[in-house]
Structure formats: C-alpha cells, structure tokens
Length: 249
Image (cartoon, rainbow, N blue to C red; front, top):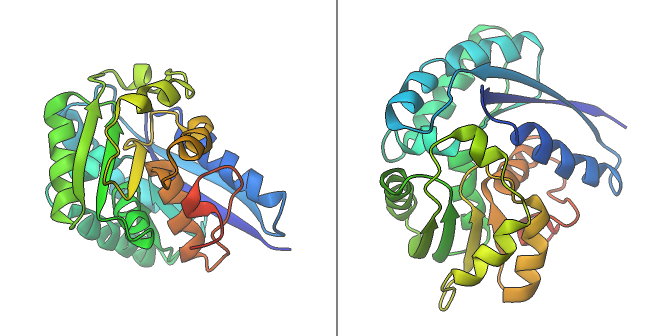
C-alpha cells in the first residue's frame, strides 16, 4: 500500500475542489489499495471576472513552488475558467511553466490543469459533440465554449447560470444540476459536461443524470481526478463518479 500526495492550486474563494476530489479518491480507496493525502496552496480571487482571473493566474507560480516544497506527487490547477480566459490552448503553456517551477525547486511533479483535463477526458470518451452547463456570466461562458471548440469538440448546447460571485457558485446545491440538466438539448451529443467549473458542486448529480440520459456525464473535477490518476499511473476508477471514472477508460 502506497500513499500519494495530491497537490492543488486553488482560488482563495474555492470551496469545492478540496471536497470533491478528495471525495472521489476516498471512494476509490474503498475498492483499491492506494491511499491519498491532500495539500493546497491558494491564490486570491473573489469574483469570476476576466480581470481577477488574469491577476490570479499570475500567482500560480508561487503556489507551484509552495506545493513542490511538500514534494507532492501530482499538482492540479483548480480553476478551469482562469486558464481558458487566458487564450486558446493556454493549458499547455500553464502546465509546462508550472512543471518547470517544480523542477527548479528539486521537487518535480506532473501538472494537471482542470481546463486541460476536461479536454483530455472528453477525448478519452471520444466525445466530438457535447452539451455543457456552466455557472459563469455569459461572456466568460462564451470564452469557455470557444476554447473547447478550438480543441475540436463541438458544443451543441450550453446553459450559463450567470453567477459572478465565486462563493455563491460554491454554495450551490449539488443536486440542483439534476433538474437543470433536463433543460439541455442532448440530441446528437456524445457526452454532457454537467459542470464546466471546478467550483460548482456536481459530484452528487453525475451518476443520476448519466443514468437518466444514457450518455457519459463528466465534470471538470471528475476529469481532473481522472488525469491525476493517469499521471500517477494508477487505475482510473472511482465509484459513482460517471463513465470516465468507471474503469473502462
């Protein structure tokens, strides 16, 4: 039995990634031998605006250094829209830069961004057409949709909840997405992104929505968990977390 250290770079107002990723990996511990501990470093952000997101992203290097001091085994950047609002393909730039910070600190760790993980996870599902729910204001949601489509995945339908306050996003009922998802047009879709935001709670809704619509359902957090496990060369499985973490991929 080995224990792995999971590091996360977290917006200061994020209250979800330090609950949902541990919940998925604790669930995994019930069926697999590996164990996990969780370690975070925070960067300031209160309102989900392009300006605050850019200022926050500039602080991510410091967080990577702090986490590499703890010799984490994998490092996750826990803000999808911060990466996507910086321009198409920026997750690759961010992942390479932050990994370099850990190498310079003699604590090399692979880096996963939730933005890159979402694209990666949809690729593993071979999903070319999707429907998405996001909590953002419409201009930011449009940036997210454009980012995903630039990666070769067509967004056929999208619901934007238009919540600017990041604490309000994190305070949402995770079961609310079950009803909201009924408003999505999933015809001709290959998969559904139930939460294109790692702050909007969704884990409790993933399996019920997937069971209802008969399509793979993911969230940014579930995709991040998947890619973290992949980077650690561990079985990509967690119970009740949707198709991607079913063990089939």
